[in-house]
Image 1: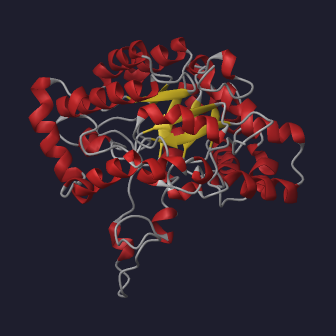
Image 2: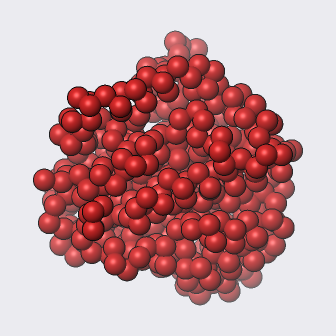
Length: 399
């Protein structure tokens, strides 16, 4: 029996666990040497010593390991998980999970190796192009796998054409950083052709953790011992850095709303993935307070509705499994919150649905609200990026 059985669940956040050579066959020749060298610096912890990759590949070739994949579908994480990096295994993993679709992101390549915020924009776009080719190739094995393409918005003049290229390749969603580009606002009118391309294609704009501005590391200099993160490392994720996660997406979305981007492109949907959602109800209150306080600004006079109503109309977000999703739904997030498993990342937990269900039951969430969380809000977000045949029920790989 699959993890989900008997009802429709779309998964708004899943990942590839890339191997060190993941982009090798997808980089344009003129950028290959320079980009691979930059990757080794930007991802030194994973690429300085790549012997781990040989070990995980051998593990997935082991018949005994493969025989126990089904019983461990939600227990094995990162590179041990079924279909984590072998695209031929992902359809069978999706059958065992029971999700009707998965929106798929990278892991190693998230953030485009910091190149968007460098003086090497040609390399930034080359990296993004290789990412998109690799992602679409991985997802090509099953129509339930929805490929996200990354589009740097660092160069106003390149963004629209680059989005068109990604859509022509087969992208089902367009990912951009939530961090502000260098030298211009994400709401700059010069980006209107980019928003228009994505809106016309009926695809969503997605923000994902990794594209957000990082916490000022001085916050960690408290005079005490270094706080190890939950995996035992000193650089990754702690309670203090967790609090920084939604800052960029709140500021970027507020700017896009106030400067009229969502009104100019009313069919364009935005999703915040793996950025939490407990902040959304209070953000809706806070942005409305700003709207009331600064109502004499000409740009605010032109808005089609209160910012919170625009958010409900065009914005969606995925709560972490440890957040109180029942509270989020009952406090303004009914039309906003989306289910996600974060498969195969550890952060998603071993039974996220149980945790979400416990929270929703305690909050008195209705059956219709549950359906919005698991199904309807995702369908609304994805638009043309989701085949209508996938809206309801799980289609098996053999079908």
